[in-house]
Amino acid sequence: MQIGRAVSALTDDVRARRIAGWSAAVLLVILIVLLGWAIPPRKGIVATDRLGPENSEPVDGYLARARDTLSGGDTAEHWALISFTEGISADHIPEYSGGLRISDAIYHVAIDRVATPVLDIPLPAGEAAALGSQRSAAATVAVAQAYNDRDVRTNAVVAARLRANCPCLVSLVVHGNLEQLRNLAARPGIRAVEALPADASAAVFAIAPLLPEQRDLADAGPNDGPVPDN
Image 1 (cartoon, rainbow, N blue to C red):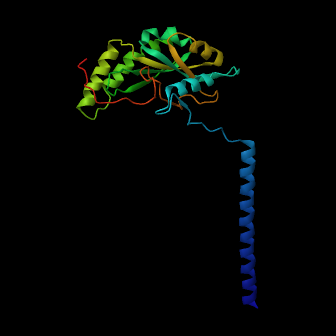
Image 2 (image 1 turned 120 degrees about the horizontal axis):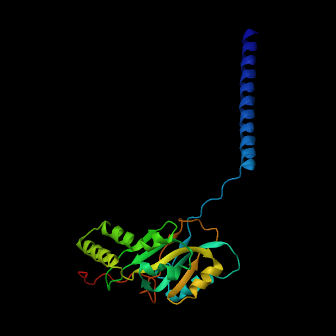
Image 3 (image 1 turned 180 degrees about the horizontal axis):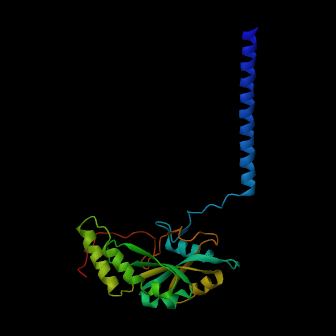
């Protein structure tokens, strides 16, 4: 009898532990549901946005696609890529930015049949930073890693031309509403303005500028020409 009572007591204890465990699990699920209702999850940052043509995209197709991004009547501000018909120097930025907030200045020194780096210079707010961006681009490429002698000589030429104030600014990223961006797109010297959706997160999108020398396809040209001395 004592053994039977002991087994019965042990069985009751196991049942009690199981019930307690199930109760705790149920309470935990309820707590998670309540917390999810009380504190809704934050909206995730979209990191797949992109400004500029896709690799090897026909230029005419990109220009049409960029124009389409400026349609609509919302008044929200959008991040947008300005592509110039020809490169400009940094001192001309105020003529093309329309007074909008500039977040990136993008430089490219074009050398026939020589691959040169595209230099994206992030900028704080203020015109002074934009005007000094060409010096920043020169300093950036001067210390860039080079993998062979051709890269060393190419970077040296690019840095020298930037320091000499070459017309090598090919794009700006700005922040403005659609009406402001459409006004910019109509200005002489501006080849295209492409806007992201208004909910695009700042500094998370990719940028691949349309270069002035890209006329048919947005692709890299050959890299088989001689690197000039200056």
